[in-house]
Each structure stands twice: as C-alpha cells, then as structure tokens.
Figure 1 (cartoon, rainbow, N blue to C red):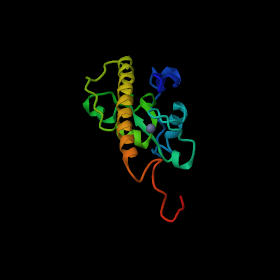
Figure 2: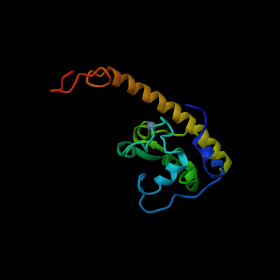
Figure 3: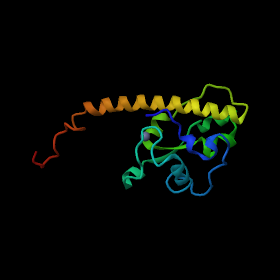
Length: 158
Ligand SMILES: [Zn+2]
C-alpha cells in the first residue's frame, strides 16, 4: 500500500479541525459513518477492502479513531480526538486488530502537534495491522477446511 494518508483528501488537507460528526444515530453505517466513508474513499484505510461491493462488505464498515478515545483520559484534547479529522473508515477486522493501541506520547500542546502525531500514529497502526493480517493469513492458509485447497462440502461432487 502506498504511503499516502487518507487525511490528504479531507477538507483543508485534514490539518484543521472540522468539528465533531453530527450527533444522532451514532453507528458507523447509519450515522456519521457515511460522511467519513465518503471522505475516506469507501475503502478500509488499512487493508483496502471496498465496502461498497456488496451488502456483506458494507456490514464490515466501521469508524476508527486514529488517536484512540481512551487518550482523552490521559489529557489529550477531546475536541480533537473526537474531530472528523481523527476519524477513518475501516473494516471491522482491521478495527479489531488495531484496538488496544496506546500512544505513549504526552498530550500534544497545539493543533499542529496533534495532527503530526495523528499522522505518525496512523502509519504505525497501519504497519501493525498489516503484520496482524499476515499472521492471520498464515493461520487461514494452514487450516484444512479453509482456503483454495479445502475439501468440497459434503454431498457435492468434486
Ligand atoms: Zn481492513
């Protein structure tokens, strides 16, 4: 995957706060998700899964806070952590792989510092998620009932 950042295509290049997503139905698929979805280009920002392809892929849509929400309790500015510029769309698997990521840095003092940190954390998380996917793929490919070498379902002629 290229080194481009999803934020590049955000309004203002993702370098100034755009405000909190619209309140209301706060699910990724019905609420603020579609806006972030359009902003990110309809794909998982980590693995590239196109979530417009089918109903099943759309069900994978989730919204990820790049700087995790739990950082607010460590003094990170809430208005930036919850800002649209800190949100990306990703598939549920990548979201799950990226959970529990703790940012060791002290709270950023300026908006500028926050966006620099967001970009760095995004690259770190994207790399960590890619490793997790590779590990999962290795497991998948060894499972006798999965993958291209799987036996046909019972009752089906080969
Ligand atoms: Zn993904």
